[in-house]
Length: 595
Ligand SMILES: Cc1ncc(C[n+]2csc(CCOP(=O)(O)OP(=O)(O)O)c2C)c(N)n1
Ligand SMILES: [Mg+2]
Image 1 (tube, rainbow, N blue to C red):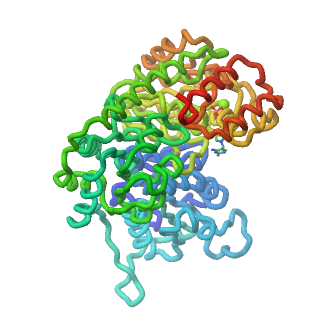
Image 2: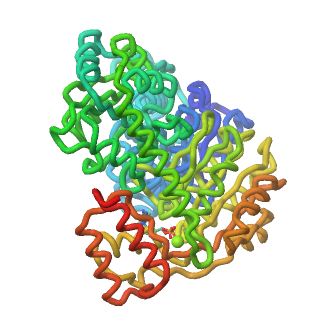
Image 3: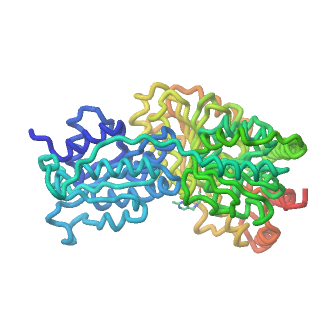
């Protein structure tokens, strides 16, 4: 049999180093699946339950390996299902290639079955490069460009393959006018600013008496460099959600997460600093950064379009974070005054105590914060943690103390529900020897994570270690939004939109051959985690948690507090609950200036 376009395409992906593709089949992309089969395992195909999950897995693959993530779907509904997962990669700057089928070329424009204008649909999310291949020789340069652009620009790209074209015989581009002769390969450059710009940055940082550093996803590989610079400047460091693993939390001057899911010392660090060094972060909420003009700013980012976007920086450096910090270090003077550092350490020490107190507050039946608090010291070495969007992201962000060698991530920029389990699956495929733990709300389980447990059941036996755990927070509520409605809008809980059915997640796990654990007492939390971590197969550990424990922002404005207080008198279904009082107490303690 002659080599088809699809055979060449699969070969080319392999030549680029692609070894795993997440996706779902369909007749629009059958040619490529045939070629994958003929390639005899050179590229592993992982079958997901839904194309959106495949795209989340591709995004997570890129996050946990630093390589290109690849997902594949059929034409029409398969391709449109990919979109949310692709946006996740797009917003978190991950290199992901989407491969989509399309109707036969002769049918295009004919309102044909499953015909969707895919270039138009993908124009925004895969705007860096989206191309429909219409003739066999074109597939070579389209593949080469799609991958090179995805890697170099850390963007999503898409290749659309009409189904008839996939089956055609592949022909190399002829040596003729109007043809392209492309090649493979990409090596990331070493990106470091010019010396004179580094000096300008050093001047600003050396003049600072109270330096705050904000580290994001772009600083994940710059741990040593961050520590060296922070020590030299006597700085405290806050971490954006995607930069949670950039620094271990056992360093006393690491204030933890920032923002709505953040910590009080991070808030204080930003409010009180006189100089801000932002490293590899697109953290969106400016109100958690210093007030404009209150601090001098230096920013380091690989992406020029992310510079001076949240705070007007005095010095904007385009560079790799590790390389740039290393180049900056010799220009930085030791800050002899350690008072600021001590202040930051004092705030942080007190905050960890506050977190423990909050986690230990009684609740009905389980305080969700305690679930994360108890997990934290039990986290195995080199584990990978993922979180879904929902109130568990608060506990993930605040309560889990990262240690060196661990990794973690979630859908950051898009903050999409439904990423927790697919992220954890991709983490396990990328690092089968490492324990993987996903934290997921019940709403997100019902939305799509439950179905993806079937993917775990299908594949776990091929993982070298079976340690894969999904911790479910069953609160029968879309709790994060319930609290947002209360605190931000001053609205009482809207039962019709917020309350969700009670589902026995642990029993579902057992039904499909995984282990299920159910916990509804505080005393049972620690032993449940221990049991899950020691299990001989993947586990769903379900915690029956109280929806009335507020996942409050670390600082909350007086206006919001008043809105919240007025909600409670306006007839919230939870009115009168003991925890409402607790919430009030917490509110009081987090109001700025009311310690
Ligand atoms: C796809 C998607 N839809 C809606 C939202 C808005 N949203 C954010 S958190 C949340 C509630 C999540 O509920 P659950 O998974 O039960 O977690 P909980 O907050 O109850 O712990 C919702 C609806 C979102 N982020 N993503
Ligand atoms: Mg919930």
